[in-house]
Image (cartoon, rainbow, N blue to C red; front, side, top):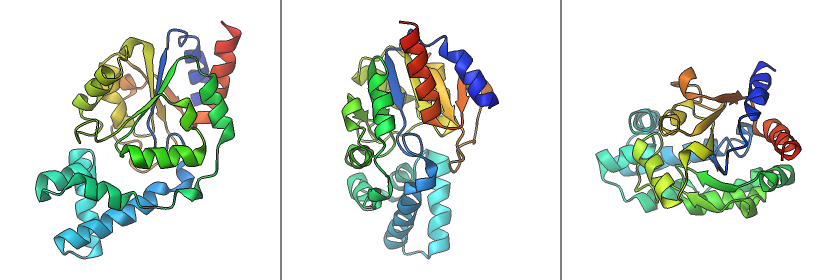
Length: 235
């Protein structure tokens, strides 16, 4: 409850926001659906196939690259010279129908005043499949994905600069939602308002620096509901 009380106080300071930016995985849906668990398996298989290693070694390499480079993909590009599109197609070949449509979230997003963007280390085809399954695609103006980032993933500062430039975003009037706390630091440095979804996702609390987190919430929808109501009442 303390997270929500603090977050509610912050709502008084959001009338200037005109761009709402959301991470995708474990942010726009609950981590309990574990889509990344499916992706994790596919990444392990991919590494086993290209490096001829067993499953435990593939997992060690996968997690090492993730921690060192921001994504497993970036590590494989740097150390193995892989073709990124082939990797992305392989690891995102998963069952997204485990996600139920989320009409309540779709309405909350539609009711937020201003633009909505997705900012993800996945690729756009995968992001669109997830968004279509959730039935929230109509709320979003664009997806800024790993390909648009030239494969430089969050938390690389260049990814954020590219997002702002590509979509003409004023960082001082934007807010960014993420389940991975470390991905908020570059956004904060650029002047964006930052929201950490402390929802138990894997590695979510790594490098959770309080000075880089404006709002901390355990889940997205209750906060969005309050925010929409607050903004409507003060316009």
